[in-house]
Image (tube, rainbow, N blue to C red; front, side, top):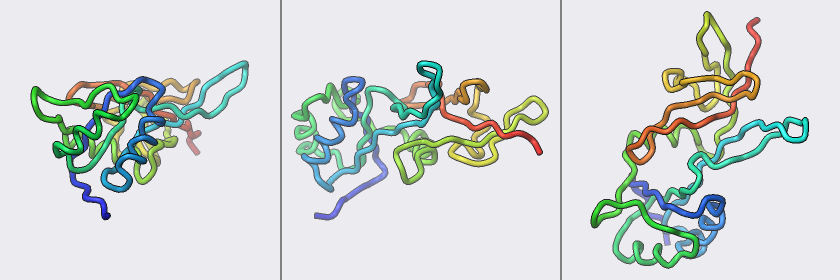
Length: 173
């Protein structure tokens, strides 16, 4: 059966830390009927005196799905273990705003993991040379150069959220 994806993305609220398990259950139950994403970000963390790369969810506690949200699919979703609730209005599942998903899709590109962006500090401001944050300088609200992270202002489900994304600081030539 071929997938019938559309522009409607929905957010599922799951137990924090259980996002990948719920994704696997959804893939098993729905096969190719819906597209499932758990957007993640690559960050540098220091543990026991060593820096290492880790992958963390962009929105902890959420799994995103894309597809037809009919009554049958809604009730199939409700039977998925680990799924707490489908974000909805009073009676209907609430799709994620198109412009919010457009930014998230730009960040994750074809992969679910947001990689590092290369940035320069030029005349007291941050300039993104390349990477997922390219042309999104206006969304950067702060930079921690020591940790290699940029605080980015995003909207998700109509609410503003500040998330940290990994950056590489380049030296001006």
